[in-house]
Length: 324
Image (cartoon, rainbow, N blue to C red; front, side, top):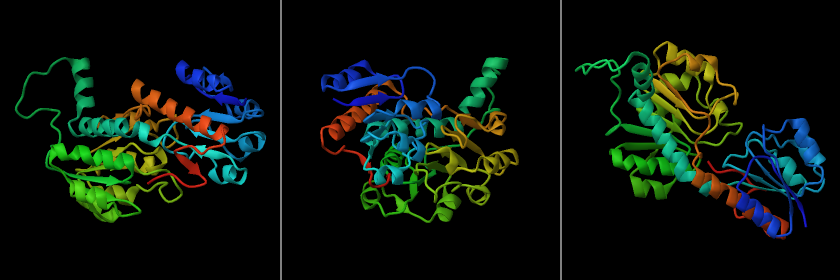
């Protein structure tokens, strides 16, 4: 029998699976655990299922002398010190396949909302009523069909975003550390350097993991390349975008619109973004459907059960690294 800590509310049937295997399970329900609370809770834990908001750093791992596996509820593992985990022989797993399609759906929802100014139109109608039909409307937006879509990070989610572009007859450019010949063959996508992708794209969707190389990947210079008619969508990690530079570009008319599901100082949102009408903001809901969250829970439980029985989780990222 092993002790398992789940740091968030969870599906009861998945908790039951752990208990049926003979494990003692504690489920934390309520606000996110503080670092101090988490340090205390992991002392006797052998399996940990956690959130992106839980910082599993060197200090936490040093307190968790019995810890054997960390299952992160998400794709990114930038909240976990993988090097420290590996040194201690702790396996780290994530839940990539479970949320791919749902996150790509949200990416497209954000793209469409920003391009067609859905948020602005909705807010104005609620505040001022229906303005009457006019030939040159106040909320005229951008055509998506037939445009050029640039995808930065062609992993599972990036490829899913690209597949949806077929229905809009879009030209697809992508930037990735490695060539994706299967995506090129299936979709006619072309790999391009980042500067070229930004210069030629009407819409750019960010799907990269957060690493030292991708932090502030999109800053003042990159936004200028995207240009005054460009639309930026971020469904990756907030710090991939320099939000100060983004706010300035939007205020000064050097970028048409932006749509963000993630934020640089999450859960805080840059106050400048809140004041801009041509920005669509959602509170990190990329995987937020009940069906997808249930799949993520099941995959994380599978990982813990595998590790605690002497096996290896299917989606093992330590030792190793996340996709891009």
